[in-house]
Image (cartoon, rainbow, N blue to C red; front, side):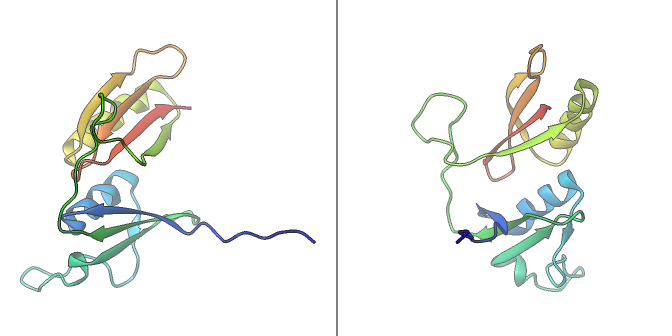
Length: 141
């Protein structure tokens, strides 16, 4: 008998401002909100943004969700302890030129550069923190 495991549906990130974190990744990945999770019109309270938001990959597959929390200690990785990363996202691009283009987008959308190894001949990469402090990498693959 062949074993069957569960289906990997999504990665969930905690954030103290779920809407802002979801918007960061929506813009960076060029993904879409799950129907009903879009930002409400100006002047309308953002009830969903106070709880749980889902971003869908337009090509299908794994999704990214954001969950509201009251507090969130920021990981100190890739620097020395005391707070390990626990999880980070790996995003890839096809060339160093695309890595440089994505660098500007990350900063424009509110991310911070943590480590720059873009000149590494074997695996050019940059490590960033999103607006909630979660680390993620963009590298040439």
